[in-house]
Structure formats: C-alpha cells, structure tokens
Image (tube, rainbow, N blue to C red; front, side):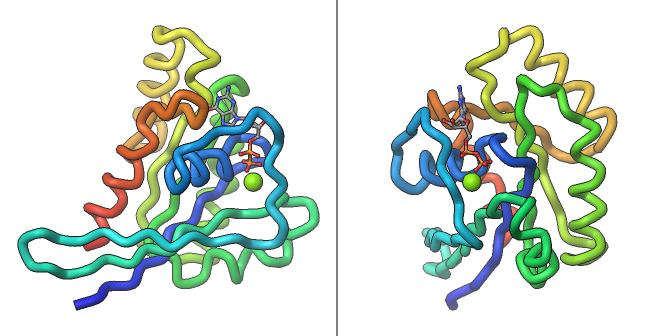
Length: 166
Ligand SMILES: Nc1nc2c(ncn2[C@@H]2O[C@H](COP(=O)(O)OP(=O)(O)O)[C@@H](O)[C@H]2O)c(=O)[nH]1
Ligand SMILES: [Mg+2]
C-alpha cells in the first residue's frame, strides 16, 4: 500500500522553516536567508519494514507571509499534520496562537500539530529547557528543540511526524 500525506510547516518569516527542510532533505545548512518563492514542497518516503507499506510525505514550505497571505487557505487545505516553527531567540509564544487559529480555520479542527523551537544553538541549554516547559504547559502538544544549523533533533521531528501519519 502507498499512503500519501501532506505535512505543512508554518511560522513567521526567518524562523528557519526552509533551513529545517533543507537540513533534513539535503543535510546542509546556509547562513544566508533562503528566499522561498510561492510554495515549495519536498517529497519524502518512509517504509514500514513489517508490512512493506510506503508512506509518501509531501513536506510543504510556506513562503514569505507578506506577499503570499492569499495562498494561506490553499496551502493548509488537506494537510494531515502541521509543524509550527518558532525562533528560540525571539521568545515568541504570542505568535503561535494566530498560527493555530489559521490551522483550525483552513486545515480543520482535528489536524494535529507540534511546535518546534528552532535556533537553540543560539541560546543556552537552561533557557531552552525553560522555554520548552512553558510551551508544553501552554499548548499541551509535543515540543521539540531544534537547530537547523547543528542538525539537532531535525531527523527526530520528521520521524516523529511520520510515526503519527501511518
Ligand atoms: N543559528 C541558527 N540560524 C538559523 C537556524 N535556522 C535558520 N537559521 C538562519 O535564519 C535565517 C532564516 O532562515 P530561513 O530558513 O530562510 O527561514 P524561513 O523564512 O522560516 O524559511 C537564515 O539566515 C538561516 O541561516 C538555526 O537553527 N540556527
Ligand atoms: Mg523560507
């Protein structure tokens, strides 16, 4: 059986969405801003060794919000899983709620999401631990600490999501 799934990354400009996908799919990182034009998606396949089922996952990368606001509804429609990315340097929990509202409006009430605190290479371990705890209490969903720069937890988030999508 070949199972098709759509996963969307959401988050403000510059939080590292494109960097996370590039790190995961290509294993590289660049310090320059990676301009995402329109909507990009990447196909990643997972196989289930027990059943030989294939999971084809389309990972969608959201473009700059200012110019592509009108694409938001289309971007999120039929999504099976959402990854909300925030920048650990910006301490921006207030930016998470509008994204969740967008998900609920355009993707559906039941679509699961996780929150990814990216750029943890720029803050100390204690601060990132406290941020994760705070987000966990506030949103009650899995929270991941990641760095697209060092690669920390990047594979783990996609493996976690793939597990949930079978
Ligand atoms: N230090 C650090 N910089 C990052 C990380 N992820 C992304 N960046 C940088 O943040 C900027 C924006 O990243 P980008 O992937 O284009 O963000 P997007 O707008 O969310 O797609 C770029 O300069 C990246 O090099 C990270 O984990 N650590
Ligand atoms: Mg981008």
